[in-house]
Image 1 (tube, rainbow, N blue to C red):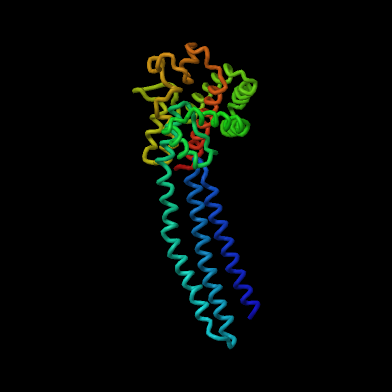
Image 2 (image 1 turned 60 degrees about the vertical axis):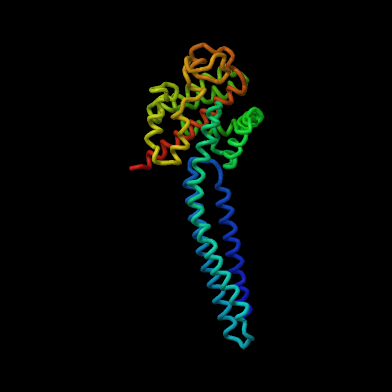
Length: 310
C-alpha cells in the first residue's frame, strides 16, 4: 500500500510541476512579435492540455488513494479524501473563465498596441518586436506625460545595444540586400551618419516595393501608397494594427509642402532632394535603423504568411 500511496503522491507532484511550467510558458510568450497571435494560441492550447492532464491526474491519484485504502482495514478516511475531490472540482470551475480570458486577452491587446505603435511613429520612431509587451503602456504613458525626450535617450541606447541582432535579422529576411545593409550599418558604427541614413531609407523603400509593390514614400490622396495594401487587411485587426504606420502620413514620409518650416524631424524627401544638410546625427541614424527594422519585420512576415494562404 505504501508504494501505491507514494506513486499517487508523485502523480500530484508532477501535475503541479506541469501546471507551473505551462503558466511560465504562457507568461514568457508575452513579447511583442507579429506571431504573437500564434504564440498565444499555442500557449493557450498547451495550458488547456496541461489543465486537462492535471484533472485526469488528480482523479487518478484520488482513485488510487481510495483503492489503496479500501484494501486494508483502516479508519474512515472520507473526511480526508473528500476535500481533495472538492479541490479538484473547484480547480476545474475556477479555470474555466480563466481559459476564456486567454482568448480575450489577445483581442484586448491589439488596440493598445496600435495606439502605441502609431504614437511612436508620429515621433519618428518605430517599434522593435523583440521589446517586452509592457512597453506599449509605457510608451503611451510617457508621451501623455510629456516625458518623451527622456524616453528617446533610452530608445537610442536600446537600438545601439541590439544593433548586431537587428542587422543580422534584416539580412536573414532579405538576403539580396546583404551588401547594402552591411555597408549602411558599418557606416553607422563608424559614425558616418550622413552615409548610413540615405542608404537605409532607400532600402526601406526597396523592401516595401519588393513585398507589396507600393512605395512608403510616395503618396496618393495624402496617404503613402503602401496604405493600399494595409487597407486590404483591415478585417484582420491584428495585422492591421501592426501594419498601420505604413498607411499613415508621418514625419519621415511627408513632402516638402507638408513639413513645418525649420522642422528638425528626420525626413526622407528633405534628405534625398538636398534640402536638409544637417541630418547626419546619431539619433537620426538610429531612427532610420528602427524604421528598416520595423518594415523588414512586418513585411517579411506578410511575405511568409502569403505563402501559407491559399
